[in-house]
Image (tube, rainbow, N blue to C red; front, side):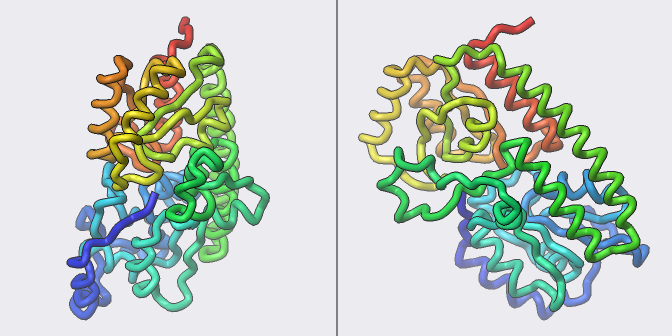
Length: 322
């Protein structure tokens, strides 16, 4: 999944001459108004949720991309650039997830302000990374999508490591808050343990032969590994690619041949979701929803998102329910 920046966005850099030292958040309230709470920015709202879990009410956190935004079509605003210049620490994912967003963040990041790449640091700590696109089955596309799959957070096991990295980063910029960050971190781990138990129980009754995910793009490899499912097909490795008529026919035939009972669109992706809906109609299967990298009013936190995904897999792939 890669961000794309329209040429018109270049004009935003000129606005830095006008917005230097401003101080208003997305909701119009001053950020850091009390002079104490660290101002934290993240690239995506899902990482802002992680920071809130660990930072609690001691931090002020906003995401560069608002909830529900499609990261593939989003363009920054002058107020977004202002918030970057005011941040005291920034968390991004890394692994080329935010390639274009970093073109906005990096030149506007104040000197000395750390930008922590969560997936990169998790990998250094021992989290195993998957090849982007699912590996050998998409080998022909690796010249376009080289490197590791960035969607590391779709395994609850990996999010425990993200939480540790966030705790350490917040402690570095706010040593006095260390006891609160540690307490929040431990509480968050307990909630993740509860989430892990819920997810594994929810999907446990899905029959092995129906544990197949067909989705809009190659986002669910970590989740499939974590839940013991298989990624059986995608419309495109990354949103915005144009599958050929043969690709569409092959995916339709694969759904039929493998007995896939449902396909999964993503709420933040438009064109590929509509194409997958048509493929599902041609194959005569159900259309369901999975969340990968954005939150919404209906699914406002990571824990809500993973519970929703587990429930949806259970509902749509034929698992028994009590």
